[in-house]
Image (cartoon, rainbow, N blue to C red; front, side):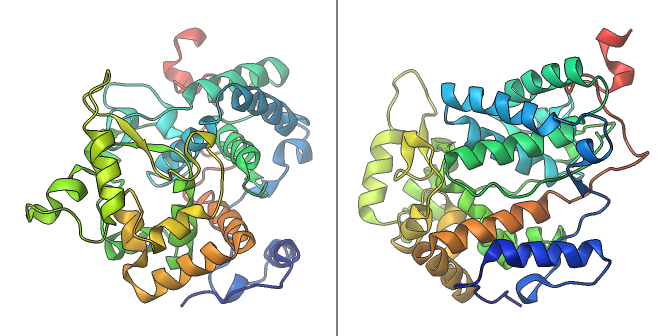
Length: 346
């Protein structure tokens, strides 16, 4: 069942009340649907436990430096976070190196943002050795980066520990051509719902994709030998020109949301474009193929604050998937290796 609209309601007050009730042990349903599970996470874990009081400030500073050099860092970290949380949970397993690690999976081709996490980890290991997990760094860095791009600075609960393994064979991330029904089923299998899916797809308000992921929509949709009729003719012509380009690449990239383009800004234009048949990826256009999807897209198109608020809640819910806490996992000293395999510790 969909959560009801909250126009006119102070979302941050609602979220505060919800979180307070959760912390008090109550079974709470925000906006008529699932609670925000904490799974052992707490606000300001490193300050509360006095293990690294200014950890979040250190992260914020490094992210700002990275964003000032390259605004695309926000989109890169969002994808990295998604790729981590939906495979074995939010345990930073996607950061581990290895020939058969998650990085090697075809679905994770082109992942970026590792260098930002590495720089933050280096600073934190100097300031607070062995205290801050790579998993928490990834979440905090993503929050701060998308806030700089225009998203709300949502609360990030911390206290995650890092996973001990990473396997490409476990990566089951769906392809961009997946149908809305398949995408919804995938989200529901991970404890998320239809509104979470609609809000998190809004991450496509910025970033790029490779032409190989949309060739079928341009030329041979569902093996029909014809383009996807749900894509506007003007959009198809524009993308065919860009994807035919051979300027230094046999597989060029195109912006997921040409409206925000190289600004990499967080805005509601993504939803406007889906309603106008101007979506780039198949799953984005599938968004408006169902009654509920169309309602969500229309709500977020017309109400930017609704989009920002629901995005904040949904990404916080995603951030609690499969977390390791307390004596589970470990705190890696280098995000690329488990401590047992870290050449720097031998």
